[in-house]
Image 1 (cartoon, rainbow, N blue to C red):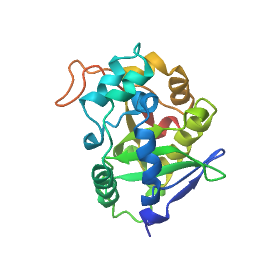
Image 2 (tube, rainbow, N blue to C red):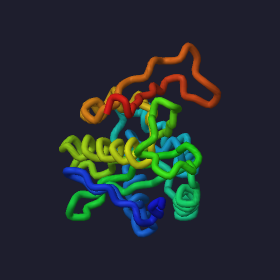
Image 3 (cartoon, helix red, strand yellow):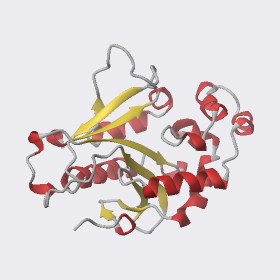
Image 4 (cartoon, rainbow, N blue to C red):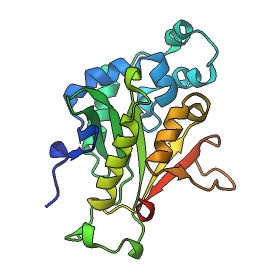
Length: 223
């Protein structure tokens, strides 16, 4: 029997991944309006939460933080709630809150474009070589005071363990924006240590794809 979204909890060494709840939204709103945080993690899967002004922060790295903050959009509660409800109701998406063992919220991880729910009784016993089961990942690590302390690696490893074992996924794909390479070497290190690596670049970007955004992948066969 599938575990209800609202009851999901996956334990890591440093973090707990649990279902993201409506009570987490005030925290999310506060951090989405932080210039430094949104400069690295502005939402790409939830466009209603951002704007051209938010994306512009990535191109104004040399400007003062106060000026950047003044240009950031105000996150409207209606948009935030709409995003949360859409993700919650999407059977091809899973939204996790990442917390410390004491319950301190660190961020979220969103698996989306999941395969349609399978009728197979036991995905853990399925031969993963019989077919590809892929999904995409978005994440936000929002507490700047806890960046680069190992929480990111553990959250990503914990998510992969659940995705590959319990969901039967064979591959997770993650957009890697230029800002991460330019301003967050610790994040690149976290991805590498958790099993992600750059995917071969296509000859031409696909429809709607940012030509400047690389893609990193993690595969069950390499976990």
